Length: 171
Image (spheres, rainbow, N blue to C red):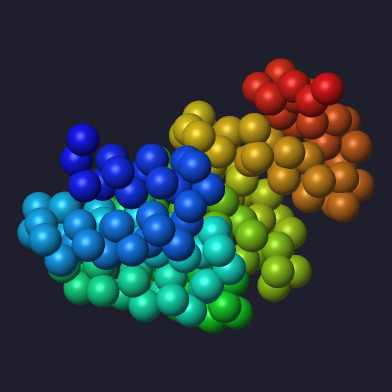
């Protein structure tokens, strides 16, 4: 079992503090896994609500891998959680500029647009995430449904809600 696998296994067992320690140990002992180990430590920290610590780990990882799209998208989410909206926006925009099919970054942009009250822009970003048909497809449909409902577009909102439920049915 690799060092990172051990960290992931600890996280799956709910031992997030131990998982962070293990991931950091991986980062210290293995140059090829350095960025991935810091990325995991950041994600585990965020899951524990240690958002500033997560930010610090993301920034360390980004020094070695500044173009890593998934790392930047997760960093953008962390910045948004900390209220650093302009910095989060810059991260998400950088991701979609280099990886236009990165649905998580499109959803990050949608959330920021919504927070600014730019509902039409938020709908457009959700639509881009839907075009990608990635991991966030159901969330993109669901969010776009809510946004369209707020715009008075009842039929479109209903259609999006139905699409979201087809992807992820709720009991």
